[in-house]
Amino acid sequence: MNTLSNRNVTVNSRRTSMRLEQEMWEALREICRREDMTVHELCSLIDDRRGLSSLTAATRVFILMYYRAAATDEGHTTAGHGKRVSLHLMNRLGVD
Image 1 (cartoon, one colour):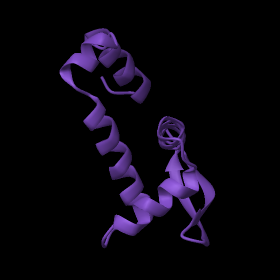
Image 2 (cartoon, one colour):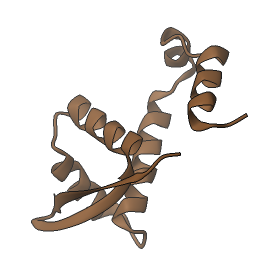
Image 3 (cartoon, one colour):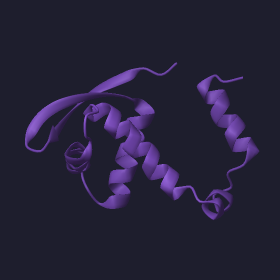
Image 4 (cartoon, one colour):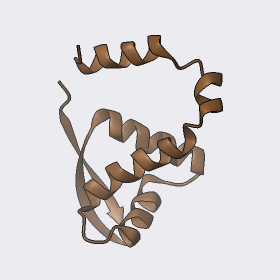
């Protein structure tokens, strides 16, 4: 079972907080490292484009879209992802 972590971020010069799962925070930090930006900068960009959804929901969708865009068939195979990795992830999530 995953618990939510509350973190403060500065979004477009205003301080706010977001509650995300630890894995989402880790994914967000990884994206920021890859894109050479801070969490605050990325969250500001997400906030600028989020429409009617909450910042937290928009951030989760952004993370999903970022990794889906990176998950090409070739990249998936090259990274060694396959049935064993999928089963490992399902076990971590508690899915039978």
